[in-house]
Length: 588
Image 1 (cartoon, rainbow, N blue to C red):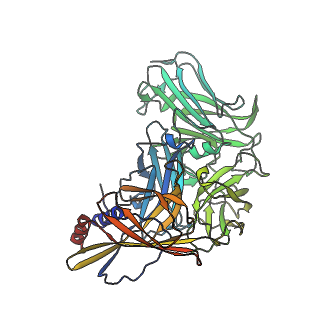
Image 2: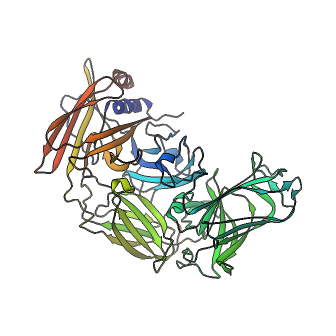
Image 3: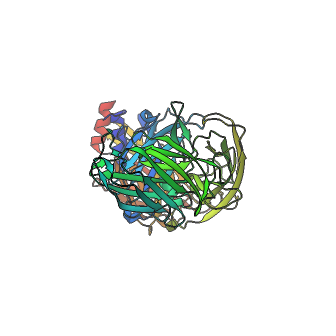
């Protein structure tokens, strides 16, 4: 296990154990009196937090025993928050750290992938492109094998009669994309077709087949699409990034005993119904008879999409459909047009929120939509954002021209009174075709409702916190830097929103209301911490917080100012355990 400045991170961990950090946000560093050594524990920057959820939204059934493998071009720049290469998931949260010297931008993003497995859930992979050093908080959906959400069709324990010489008779597997009779999904196998494992050995026993299939008209299904908003495909021997924009996709499990089928001795015929409202990436318009479509397959081990076949859209018995042939059996398949290298779009936000206003995050969903507006909006981004004046979003590999919509919600979850606050339609027109990374993209302004998306009326709550090591002649003061989540006290356990960031011991938020109580959650190193039912004061007061790890109390002094609509919490001289202090002294 590789560590990055290991002893420094031990101090960060122990400071986290001794503190119950309650509010966070904008960066500020104060002069501290009688401080020979002043330590910021944020050696690595928490660039990304991913909450791993069940695609059906049920918290009682969320994934457990989650394993993560980091892959991709920039994987060597990715650490856990304690500086380790091995990244563990705590309380369904994946926290990614990068060094402070890494400064990703839209023109030079930091890109990597996370392959995720969990007991009883379909394995998946998600691709990330960090374009800023600001905190990013988003979600990754996994599908429970025995309880898929609406929009994902499941067919389990299908069988094919197989022998040493292959199929004993011509056979087919039939399913649908969403359970309706007009969303055909069919594989036809010729008599004698042999099924091979990854080493090319023919499998002799009968085959068990499980299918998980989805169209593009369900947001739950879109969240399940492997890769997320983009995938990596091979072009001229190189891996390039593509917005795959699936017309349909699925996961195929085909086994003989405990051996997985990876290829066929002769091609199977694959026919699939496709939605008329699917936006063809090659044209930017809804799908029509005669359009070109492609069948792509994903290998989870390499996170590479490979072109398997090309076909034409035709009119079938129940509407539009396309037929392909396939000799490989990938982990995931999709029908799309991934070879188009088209334009990019930069969205610039205009709102009544200043960049340095107290932290308040909105849940933002950005979708590509058919034109004129119809069903099957394709999600190209979702996550928590401050939506300050001048904030930008950058997308590539979209059709040369198209339409989209920015949806702004107060929250992702109903418990925190989820409400659509604003939605803005936009259009773009590319200046030419190109691959990702070039600067030739459309620039679009997004004007948000200044009444709804603004910083006025926010009650500002600031925390000022530091821990102290004092032994003999040396006095050390440590200030934590971390992200914090929160929820209403009656929410389902685990339904946390992003509150903001504590930077160098200082943070300010405008998302909380005096007189109400909240639950708070944060992680510091390999330890997660939850504080339940914490009241926001309405007067000057002092809180006594008991440490859950050590037998002591800490005083939190609260200055309440109703006229200025502000609360200031001073959480000073938090006693850092001797063990952490001793380790730190040895380091220095």
